[in-house]
Amino acid sequence: MSLVETIENLARGKKNLRFMEVCGTHTVAIFRAGIRNILPENVELVSGPGCPVCVTGDEYIDAAIAYAKMDGVIIATFGDMLKVPGSAENLAEVAAAGADVRVIYSPLDCIKIAQENPAKRVIFLAVGFETTAPTAAAAVLAARNLGVTNLLFLSAQKLVPPALKMLLADSAVRVDGFLLPGHVAVVTGADAFRFLQVPAVVAGFEPEEILLALVNLLRQVDEGRAEVANEYKSVVRAEGNLAAQKILAQVYEPVDAEWRGLGVIPKSGLKMREEFAAFDAEKVLPLEIKKSARKTACRCGEVLRGVIKPVECPLFGKACQPLHAVGPCMISVEGICAAWYKYGGLRL
Ligand code: SF4
Image (cartoon, rainbow, N blue to C red; front, side, top):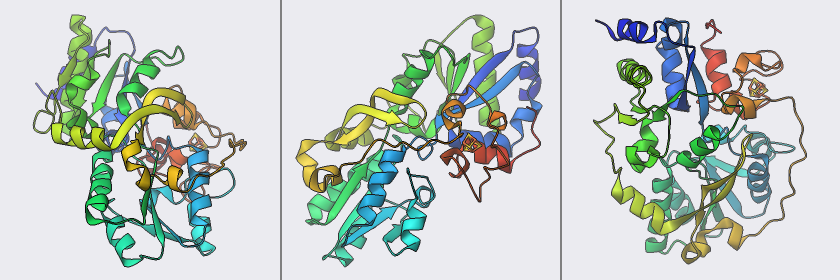
């Protein structure tokens, strides 16, 4: 029997079920493979807050822009941060006006930029989840070992498990199970999600792996179980990557953090430890950033919680499109709205 037939059999006669794929990479993989279109009518996939760019708030972007406008500062960033809106402008606009903003592919690239520009300060915009945060931590340690003193990090890195805990406590969010993010789980381990009290499966990113995870979720529902299963055993271990966890814990400590559209989530952010204050942009170059008063009709917050689908935002595909996006969910390559826009013609 095929995986699709197994899903149909397991779903038959069940109430409407909503499973959340947490990770933006899953969202895109699910659309690419057309998985939403082959699921039974009563099995719905909703997307969650697993796009780090999408959950980065105005104030962080405003701080990055303020640094970019300082004399003698080079901003190093991943490309998908360039068009994320701050309260008045974005980094691409500031770069067009003359600021030195450079797109990099790894935090380790920043070390070379810093070494080549000893008279300037390089500030890396450290945005990401557990997947990329260890590499940023490794760059901090490498910079210290190499005696690089003109490299700073502006951290908006976030942790996924606290966000899922918050979603489960949100009465507006109805989720019957989670497709857990495979890349994050490589670092955290599947056991980091044991607190969830709904069916959950760590999933890979190939279509068969996603379907296998959905079969597992439906089996758990069918048998009345609520466990954390691992259908990505080729790379995810129960305990995760201990070396990556160690390096993260050495450089960062968990702090309460603001998620765009979700509010402040306890212990969901990563702040540099005092020992590394010389690399912390907020400590070396403190700024006074006002709370953003920007108001738009963007409904990213509800989209990122799976409360509405992107097409339910009145701006979707009209005022908000990838080339003139209103919200970050339409900007990032892994943004939920961008995925819905790109792979349109979906069952709603
Ligand atoms: S369609 Fe655009 S405006 Fe609407 S929620 Fe998505 S990003 Fe925000």
